[in-house]
Length: 242
Image (cartoon, rainbow, N blue to C red; front, top):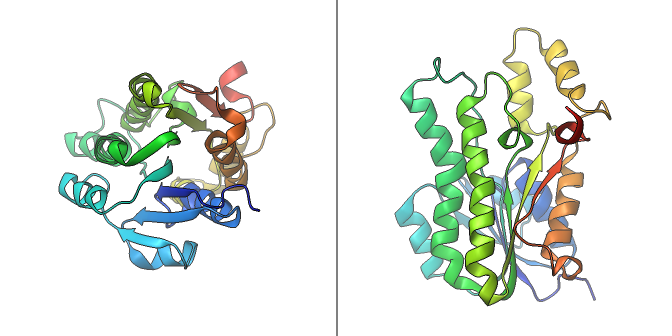
């Protein structure tokens, strides 16, 4: 029997990037998937037999409606997010609001509304970022929002512990996703930007979506039953040594 057979897991941001990688890995392991994202077609391409729920995770009414019709969940993997660059002084209010909505308000609303749908012993994985642990230039609003995601995981680990529900955050470094590729393509020198991102950790390479999905699998599985409230950098050692 596949290890996730009979378990229902909801994955947000499942139409691309790390959300798609996590969903495909969990689906291959037998999970019954509910996939959330803005557009139906990319979600169907991720896992055609999944329960597809297109919505904006920062829309309170839409998430409330999702929760009202959602069956009990054994796992929740919240990967949806967005990236905009800029310093504190150089970013307009709209950029800050957009980063908070996409990266922090969305996960907050998903947990707020779907929390009651989590079965006893369920596991929740939030996608943070290693630049929510350590600041870098020109990503101020994104850094702040992802730091909030990490604290959200820790608060929920405390609140949901009496129900046996575990909550952890993964904090990846640069991973080759569409979002990162767009940032590279928009830089003045894309080749130099790619080389720089690959050099920000001792292993001197970018991560892969499969590596992030493997950790999500572990955190959702029975082998991590005493792991909760953690923020785990997966960044080739950058957080540890730089």
